[in-house]
Length: 216
Ligand code: DX5
Ligand code: ZN
Image (cartoon, rainbow, N blue to C red):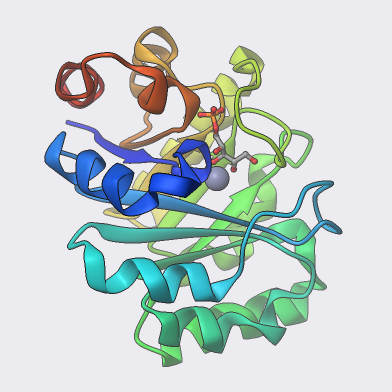
């Protein structure tokens, strides 16, 4: 059984509260929030004030994906803003600082996650896995919604599922990028239990059916 985490990057910002309420009404238990700094990735989205604004209007689990350089500078703010899961890129700082950043997230009482870009191998997660509650595998280059799913990430997903089963059972394994009703099946077959879907979810005519399909 998998969970969907709709990415509100693809929501209608002019009618954001309506779209967040509609997302929750469709049955989603998690909400994915993409934070981009225009430096770690070539796009800018929004900051911790978005997390703070959304917190009081939904009971969904706030799954915050930081695509920012040197995230230790900002994790306290994201935790205080109401993130439930706070996920940092393994490529976004030195190994010492990544470790310290995960510790800082834990000290704030928030669940830490680690994410790998497509070119980063599964092994990069291993030194941090014992501290993580979530591992995120990018199935597109981070930065933009609406890109094509990279099926060649599936061996890495499977390898991470095995690592999690061995070293950190219960840790979530999430995929992000190009997930729709078809590619979700491939991700589940390879071990994913949380499925981020941005454009496919917000474009779906029948969102209840979309959630049910991904979570079946
Ligand atoms: C991309 C973001 C994704 C994005 C996914 O860098 O991390 O969360 O919103 O969008 P889709 O599902 O459209 O690929
Ligand atoms: Zn994301």
